Image 1 (cartoon, helix red, strand yellow):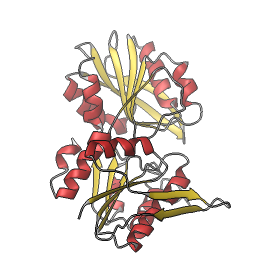
Image 2: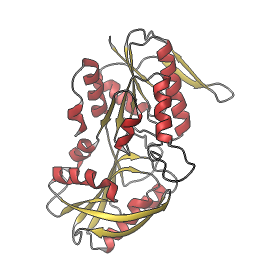
Image 3: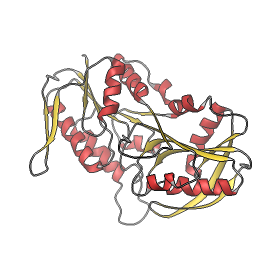
Length: 309
């Protein structure tokens, strides 16, 4: 088997970086729309018996990109591909991973079922919002962490006067790992979320007075949480606040909130494209080498576990 790379329309720039890193061209495929809006997929190369990787972030427009992925998977299955791996840098619906109130779906599980039935035999994702989503799949799942990519950017920019901040209790382990790698202290913000996309910041556990604070999170959606956390940190005496996060969803008022906030910098990865989002505070670092290395190791039957930390 040889490696075949395919990509939908969600994040072609990331796919191109992975392709360049591996020295493998992206295979010829049409992903377009019929006049009624239905998605058309046609693979123009033989996939029979090959080791195929489809790079497709499930970023906005989410449902369009999900449908592209499902149709590509189905086309590959019917083309007798040897092994089909879905590489999903950003996994959508991950925040809907449990039944937290009556009469609601477990959307992350439904999406897992759709991807598996469509033909995926292995999954590669980056920083799942809830790691337990791996259990929704009956196929191997490699959940890569972007922490090392973010650490490489930060390591020369911190000192003993820096503190890593978790924006909520659920992110403490992520903040602890980054703080240990950087040799910094840690603080935790206690908050509650009365409804989706609304966070009420309450207090800070830890000392941030006179320190440079780095908030670490897995994603930035509307930026309400990080801006509220920044304001709280500044009110507690922090000398400056920056943010590092894996997934730059940046929906709704996010860019405006960041631009008008006291934040000095927002560092994100390119799991989701940021083109067209005008923000001087935004710094994008690439996860292409991480994804490319995982593809190479999977193809060669080598361990991927060292990429998890």
